[in-house]
Structure formats: C-alpha cells, structure tokens
Image (cartoon, rainbow, N blue to C red; front, side, top):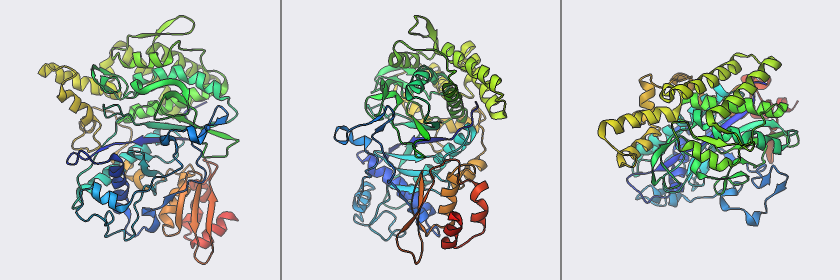
Length: 532
C-alpha cells in the first residue's frame, strides 16, 4: 500500500494556427511531430523517425471480458490503424508555396511524413486524431510522473518554436487544455499498472465516487458550461461536461467515468493497464502530483479490498454538479440516501488510505507526503477555497479571473475572460498565464527547469522506458520501430528484424541493463549479450 506503482500520463494538446484559421488540426499536429523530429535529427539517425510498432495494439478489447465488433466501432477507436498523410498535404497546410516538397525537406529527402515518433526519454509523440499527443514514459511514482509530464510540454514547445522559425509555415500555438469550447473535448489520460486478478467490477465501483469528486484538487478550471461553453460561469473541471456514462469503452463519444479499454501493454494474464480518461490536463505540478498520487492510493485500497463502501446515486450528474460549483458547497446523493460534499467524500477515501497505510507500514516519504498534501488541501478548500491558489490549478485560475472581473466589471461571458481561459494553458512561458504566475513564485513547483530539461532527453531509470530510451539514443541507426512492449532492431548482415519484447514494465531498468549499454558494444554484440 503506497503511491509507488507504474504510471504514465498522456496529453493531447489543443492546436491552432491563428494566421490560417481554416487549417486542418490533423495536419497542424503532423507539423508538430515533424518539426520536433527536425530539431533532434542531426546525428541521431532513426531517433528522429522511429516508427511505432502496432503489433500489440488491441483498442477494441474490453476489460469486461469481450471485444467490441470492429464494424461497430467509432473510427476514433481504431488506434491500431495509423492515418498516413502525404508531404503535399503537410506543405499545403503550412501555406508553403513549395507544395509537393516535404516538411523541412532539407533534412528529410524522402516523401514521407512522420505521424509517430519514439523519443530518447522513452516517450511517444504522435498525431492522435486531430491533436499532437505526448505519452510519457513509464514511471514508478507520482513525482516522476509529474517530471516526465512536464518534459512533454517542453517537447511540443520546441516543436512550435521550430515551426515558427521555418520559412513558409504559419506559427502554430499549443495549449494544454481539454476543450475548444466549440463542442470538442480532448483528453489527458492516465495509465496505472494493476494486477489482472482484481475483478474489474470492483475497480469500477471503487473508483466512480473518487473520480467524480477528485476534481476539487486536480481540476483545471473552465470558463463556460456545457459542451459549447455557452452558459456563463466558471467551473472546476474542463472535462466534466463531456461525460455521459459511468462505464464504457469509448474515449471520444459517450465518454465514461471509468474506461474499459483493455490493452495492458504488458504480460496479459498478469497485468491490466487501468486507462483513465476523466482527468483534466494540469499545468500545475502539484495538481498532477495529487491526481496521480491519490489515485495510486485508492487503487491500492481496491486491490486490498479496503476501499470505502460509497456509491453515488447519479454519478454523471454528480460529476457535473460538483464541477459547476466553485464554492464546493454542493452536495450529491449517495445510494444510502446521504448527501455529501465532494470534499466529504474525498475525506472518506483519505481516512481509508491513512488507516490502511498505517496498518501495512507504508510510511515511505512520498506516500507520507501525498497523504499529508491530500489532507491539508482538503482542509484548506473546506475553510478558504482561495487558500489553495498556490497549488490547485482551478483555484489559481479562478482567483486570477475573479480579480480581473472585479477590476473591470466584466461578466463570465466577456470575450476577455474567454481569452484568459485559453491563455492560461498556453505552453509558451512568455505568454501563458500559468507560467507567469509560476515565474513569480505564485504556483508551487516540484521540479526545477534544469531537471525538466534533463527529462526531455533522458528516460526514467527504473522502468522498461530506460531500455527503450537508451536503445534509441545509443543505437539510433539500428532501431527501426518501438512500442511500449517491444523494441525492433535491424542488425547489419542479418536478415529480418530483431524484436526485443519488453512485456515486464519494471524490467529493462538501469540496474539490469545499464552496464550493458555503458559497454558500448556493436548492435550485434549488444543483442547477443542481452539475450545471453
């Protein structure tokens, strides 16, 4: 029982080119991927163009024990069928008069547009439908999850800078938010490794009340209500209004509070990957830390059979009612007839976690820190919401906007407030409102800029991401594809592709393969020794 478990975060960034408002977001996303490839291409061979290996993708496998028929699936669910774009499409989208050339043709002579790439830090950068997505490498604790999530922001920022400096291409802006307020929502997903032996029904039942209420400390805040944001007001969560079901497989339609996608990306009969789609994309480091740390603790409670006996009468309605009340006074009904605030429900989970950690001797510093922050944040929110402005994203945003509204006499539906909502999530440090608060010391941070910069190009050392990242960095000419559960090599003089499976997420670590990498063998000898 602790916060330590394998976790990875995914962020789909909002993307637009202000000077070409009609540009396809899919094509702009491809520009981002190709631009980042261009920033790191020199001297790194395949590192700048390593393909994704789709061999083990099973997006229609449902954790409830069946597979959705392919013919009935929404196209957005078919993530094992990558779309290919032509170079001409990309060039035209950028307003490039040299239509027909490749993006950054001076570096990439082939008529090929990257839609996926695997990074030296073990992460994946790719085009997910209409958004550039950064999927972090696997980490083993919430603090590291924050670090490599922040690294993703710097990766896409570097890509945007590259596009801005490229003649013929319109500048592309990227936002770490979850809706365009034009009916579209995009995700910030979490992935937690769990034993398959835990019944999925227990997982869903234990998580629904927790997920519906955790937004009070990890929501990102949103101006407007409804999918179009047309109803005036400020709400706690960016994603709440886009959820329609309690449990389900889809992620872009009929969004469920608990997603049933069953792609473990690991030994199938040993693990499940809990794919969480209900979270907001957090700019703040503490909100991300609490989001992942508390969820890890609740999963431990579920695995131990010690999760609180709570059930919401109307979970989706409760999720949205809580989000619509930034005073946090709204109560929601439980099946047993009680009415509790979100803070009260979170306190029940917190006390269960405290009790179970004490009983199992889980007192490592990070677990203790998450428990302490969880409790103190709930206390602060209960007594003075704005007292949490230095650590909780939506509170900081709410306070900033409320102050501006008060000074200028503006309503929530004023266009200037809508612009602030967007500008909060701008990833550019010189423009983003979150970044400006953080630079003034008004937002608590857990990692320095130097540490984040290091994580951009270095993988975590205690998961298989280490093997993936080091393989890409050290043998860039020999890695032809990779995925979460395999790295594919081409070996000079040998026919075919050499596939190294990485189905155990906590193998491939520095402790296990670091010396082998450090020995700087040829790729042939490296693989022979690896398999010895």
